[in-house]
Structure formats: C-alpha cells, structure tokens
Image (tube, rainbow, N blue to C red; front, side, top):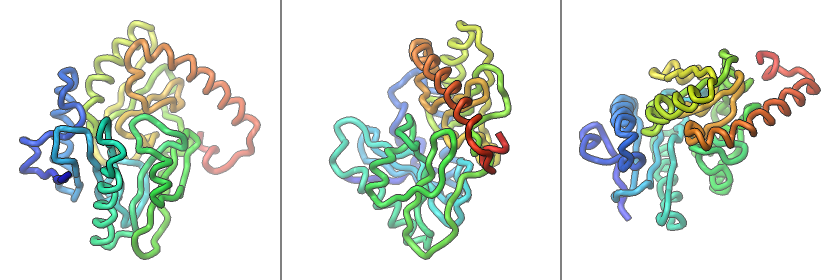
Length: 277
C-alpha cells in the first residue's frame, strides 16, 4: 500500500489517523493539527498509510523534539502506531525503514525513541523495536527506557535529561497531569474526564499543559503526551485512567506501587540519579 507525508499545505484536507472519528475529541483533533503545523517548520515528518486508518509514524530532529532527552544529531521517533487489521502486514517495518533512510540521507547518527521498560500505553512496542536492532542507552527510575539505533558515524550516546531522573514532580498533593497537544485525545480526557473524576472523589488535581518546546524539554516525565503523577510520583501514561471506572481500578495499584517503591528506595544506597528526588 502507498504511504504519504503530510505537510502544511495538505494538513487541512488530510486526516491525522487517530481521533478523527471521536466527536468528544474534536477540539483536541484541531489542536493536534495546529501543533503539527508548528513543528512542520522544524523538519518534522508525519508519514501515514494512504487510507482512513491508524497506520503512521512521526519523527523529527531530536534537538527539536518535545521530549526531555539530549540526543545530538539524531532523529527522534514520536507516535508510531499500526492498528487493527493492518497489523502483521509489514507496515511497521516499512514506516521504520523510511525513518532509517531519512536518518542516513541527513547524515544523522541514528534514531532514538522513548519506550517503557515494560510496555506502557501510548508508547511504542519495546520488544518489537529491540528486535529491529534498537538498543537501550538510558533508563529512569519510573520505568522508561531510551532506545537508539545507529545508522551513521559514532556520536554521543543519547540520554534522558535530569528533570526525569527521579520520576517525581514538584507538586506532591493529589493528582498532577502533564499533557500536550501532541495527541488528539488529551484535551478531552484531561480537561473534562479527569476533572470530573477528581472532583467526584474529592482528590486535588493540578493540570499542567506543555505549550512550548522549552516546557516539554524540562518536563518531569519523558511521556509528554500524557503523564499522571500521584502524591508527587509518576504512575501512568494511560490516558484512559482519566475515566472514573478505570481510575478506581488503577488507583489501588498506584498506592501499592508507591508504598513498595518508597520501601525499596529506603534500602538502596544513594546515587546521583536518586539524590535529587
């Protein structure tokens, strides 16, 4: 099947894969297009299948990526999604191959991307990327890995910025949601569903929207699409927990996770990554 690359001229008439059929997310869909129009000026690429389907890959220069990572002369992979009946047809490899070819043509050192140490919602498939030749080059205490794939001459090894090392945010009360318009789903889920969920359960909620590149690059989580913190500690990238029923199921797990993590950290020797927490 054919693939197309969107640009500033075609953006208005073409769909951007996710969120186009969800009326609740119409505002977020428009906001994602506005965000794309902005980053297209910085050589960002949105490549998708030429059908009405969720098969696409986003990437661009890592120096301009809305992610707290230092990766000089790399291309940063963003959203990478092959869904439904399009799986296991070679689309993932074809989209990745196009990004690798672009990195080589632009004389980049390679590709870099953020994933979960274990599978995290709204991140790429870690195991699949490792099978394609990616390697882990950095990790955080909160369960994120940084992967890179070399395509050119040796360069500096990509690494996470210090803002994400501890897996904690400054605000320690209740829930804190960091989000951006990198995804069409965030506006509704954070500003409608999560607000209602927190209010109904009398939980303090702080919403922090990442509206500039500088803000995103200093965020306390590598997942700048959506990251939820509870009592100051990162708990999930799963935007569906903004909905009441999913929230109730997840919150018990967070409490167990936080208690276990605090207990473990009290027994571990101090290291530079933990000293700032």
